[in-house]
Amino acid sequence: MTDGRRSSSSTFRTTSDAEGSLYVNGGEQIIPTINRLVAAVQAAGGAIVYTQDWHPKVTPHFRKDGGAWPVHCVADTWGAQLHPDLDVEGPVIRKGTAGADG
Image (cartoon, rainbow, N blue to C red; front, side, top):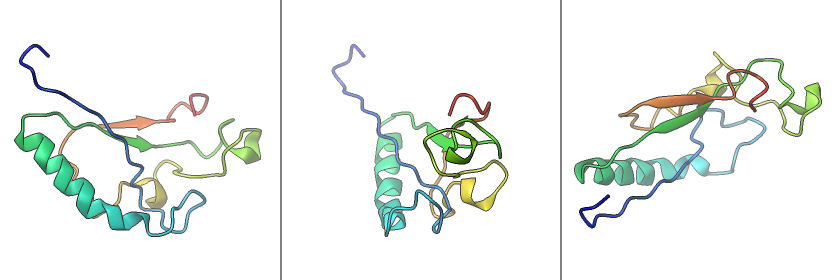
C-alpha cells in the first residue's frame, strides 16, 4: 500500500468439530474475539478471507493413509464446517480438497 496504512493477516482454525482429533480445549471461546477483530478490519476497509480444511475421506495427508495427521475436517461432514458462531462475511478458500495437497 502507498497510503501509509498497514495490513496484517491471521489464520484461525475455527471448525465445528469440538470432539475431533485436532480440537483445542476451549478453543471456541476465542470466536467472539475473532468476530470483533474481523468487524474492525472490515470497518477500516480491510479484506477478510477465510480458510477451511476440506479433506477427502482418503488422502495421504491422514495417518491412516500413510501421512502424519489424524483424520480431521473430512469434506461434507459437520466437523469440517466453519464454527456456527463465526461471522463469515467474505470468501472462503477450501484447502486439502485434492487429497494430495494436505
